[in-house]
Length: 296
Image (tube, rainbow, N blue to C red; front, side, top):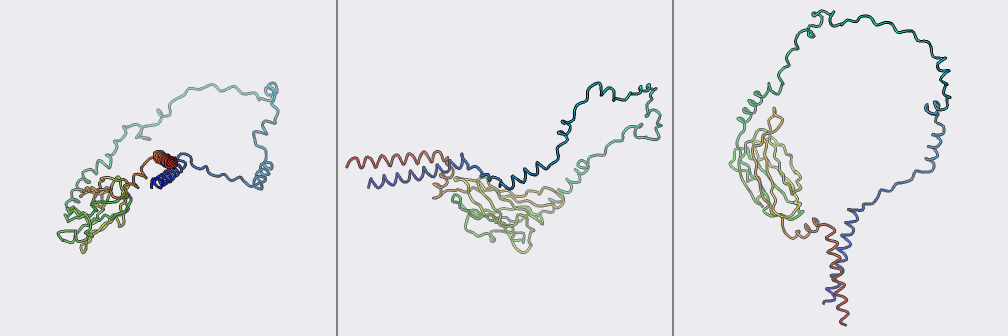
């Protein structure tokens, strides 16, 4: 029995060491890209083009013989004496002020920036937009526990039909939390979390329906083990505003645990430590095998 355990420990150690070694090689010594040499025919074609090309201007100038200084003086034409500079006067002084009145008078004042002039108008528009919002029931559902790198569904429902609750639109298999939010004709719902990979399964912006509940769904994958928060946010969209108005925010804690915790540790661990652990297991297995056969 001890011999079998030693052999299994040796094999596990060798497997762990090989896996960690391959990860280290891929991380610190990536393979170089293979460079394919150009065919001989293409090289000959490029050489023929270079030989047939005309000489450059610099080569022609280099072949010309430089002129002597005396020849340059003989060939240079006599220059006429420069005319004497006459009295100068300012052009602007002779131009009457009625030709360019803007140059004579003071510069006109600048207009007030558009953002400053429209600040009061924007504030009034936001206040009027908030007055049009109506309070409706909201409910969202999340699992109380999740597994590492195993996807789960998150659902958010808004009921603007006049009903008192939005729970009817949820699956009803997890942790359900109810609340209220102010909504407009068009609403945007967002889900965020630092330790999750979130994929939207429904349109984030929806028009409120007076006949049935509006439902948002996301597929969420935990990236690390432990307790992590998911944040729900609801925004009322104003057609005249650039930034939507947030009217609802809620945080839910999800516990990520289970049998996949060992896989999480293996994925998050440093490959060097995995390699050292594999080598240690292999050495321990070898020592066990030698001691077992040494007693025989």
